[in-house]
Image 1: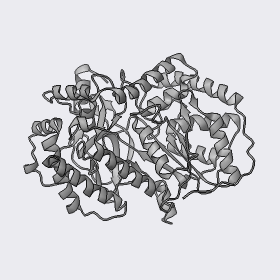
Image 2: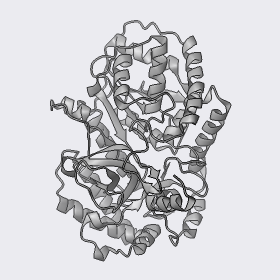
Image 3: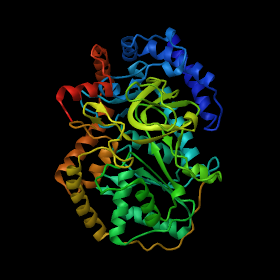
Image 4: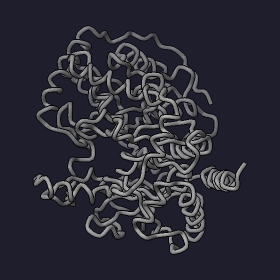
Length: 493
């Protein structure tokens, strides 16, 4: 094992220890800074693209003493370059970034065995703390998953993550309910009625758009459920507007109306393929701990830091001021420590929490301080969405017209301890699956998207290695900065 391998593995073990200590552990800023300096040096030495990125900014590890000054890699770099800090032949896991998969826009995040352990450990800890904060070690419940399975989309981050949640917290009868033909309505209705009948809580996790699809179908069918206390729902991936205008509060109201789950037990998760740790809102955790209700925020765990950066200067903003969210995540050992996203948001609680308000948009060649959409309605052309909504309504009517409300006998159950022209992102794939049975074009897009996820899993690593060797940053991406310039050149409004 080389010195670099030893250093990487040692740092991985130390970060795994930080994660195992939990979300309430204390990691001082000085300690976080020390870890960050080690990780920066490791990435600078081992990651060719990152080193060129730093050289373009005239920054070396010897010049940096604060974690805040470590260069932030724009998430666009992941869409155009292979960003890996380990020999690519050691890759054991690949995820696609949202909305940017083609031969010229790779958008692939590779992880080695250490990186896989880190991302799984980080998100198991976060899921336990914020989605199952009332569960003692070893307790499990039935989990109903409204998202594609890893078998259907093997390199989709959403599918991989939700399968890990099923493995860590779910009983054997937990199941994925979203397939190529849409939601398995019969199995979903049966599972919900079984929970009602037995009085044993269930957890639903999945794509926001899939929930909206199902809730609206239930409304038209005059169907509702009263799931037992302790049931909960977690949504992620955003809602892309295909099923009508739905605000975040509208969504909570639908959950209460259709499922009988109170707002306190609704949790949202924000995940970025470019950074290892998902961020959950704190509503359920605060409720379980008996803390007073307040506006939701996403606590940042001890092994991470999040700042909102000014869209004009990329300097940190005080709490409450909206900017581009940047993440420094010690669990990013196989990639890069610091990533700045195109998410608009703000920090809370002295930087210990954050919240997203939407995606950034370009107006008159500038990044607008106003989001491109509401938090639950990200991105998209409204005319297209109106057309697809028609298809969706048709498919909902068709499926729910023949669906029967199952009569479940009382039983005893035991609780066991994107961009235009690119292949669809995780939320887009979910949307395409939902509308595909009613629309030939949507079915074509669905099959293309799912085929791409499988293609990335089956493509030989030698292909990626050859591609990586060709890459440099002579014309390096500048994230939203380059979008500003492009917008000005093209005269876009």
